Image 1 (tube, rainbow, N blue to C red):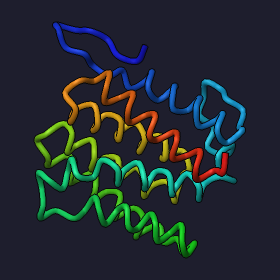
Image 2: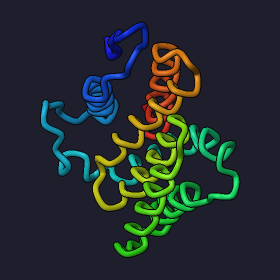
Image 3: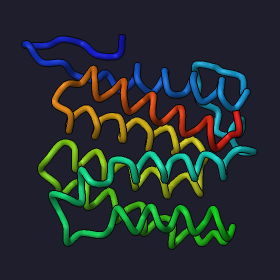
Image 4: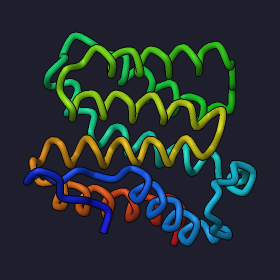
Length: 173
């Protein structure tokens, strides 16, 4: 189980959720699973992972945009990720700026779900640089959904299941 009970609250244990996501992504993409996340193993699937990361971030983006309607930095990060995937044009300065801007938006947000959603966008665009940043986007997406839902178990399970179904669709399995 990926949650623990502390003082009558459930808290997501990110290391356990990340391990679960890593194992599931390895299975879906037919890659060997190891305890250590190997960036090179996922390199051939980088564009699929980028699309998946963008979808994961966009799925929870309302958590941020409803609370911060004038701040488009997370949305721009997702758009930059999609643009890289579609064109293959990679400018590290653009990717880095989009990612850092989304993470800055997260730091400025006071609400847990909004923070996690903005971080998901920052991780998604970073997938253009390192494919395993997609795992971070998925993890933050789960955290945003769990915080939004008010029940960590329900939010975590529903979001994780949606994410993995989306990856299966993108991977054609």
